[in-house]
Length: 257
Image (cartoon, rainbow, N blue to C red; front, side, top):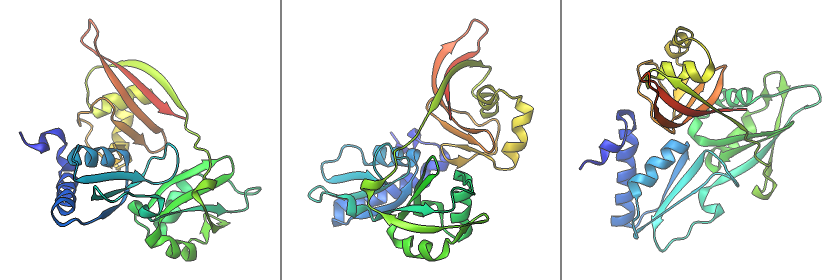
């Protein structure tokens, strides 16, 4: 039985990489620290490594229910601690009385200075307080180069993880029915729009499934898949609950915020 049957085609490169990391740990006693992984990538890594007494797999990207995390693979006799993951927590200081910054503003500013998405973790916003988690290897670069976000002048201040903001994460649970498991049909139900309105968002690369851009409306979704559509927000297909008498899927889903 091939391990690949458990994963989608576009996930195979990560599966191959994870198999290589596992082999290096087992055969050569090497340690491996990954970049920040999204939750789906973390699940792939957990599945590939499996239960193996020779490999210690651990994750960290901040405290609490943090989303993006770095993974550390090592021989079983090595125990990882917070410092192992080479992450720094920063607050973003800005004139909050006069400026409002959004998650998109901060993400765009970090990308605009040439930072790859895998080199920083969660952006945490609680009221007017904003924090970002950076990989140690890029922290100094970001400190020097991130001087403004939009029209606001900003400055980074490094903090201990004990000062991490409380995560504010609210979801609205809903249920509905769909005619098929096509991506465009699922998104139309979740965001309460027509399938034709979803099409341009797909074509422009504004739709992500499990944190990866998907442009094909016929893409087949699965229970627990996560979605984001620019301008509509994030959501998740929680479960498939059988079919109605009219042969439609009954679904449970949730919307963020």
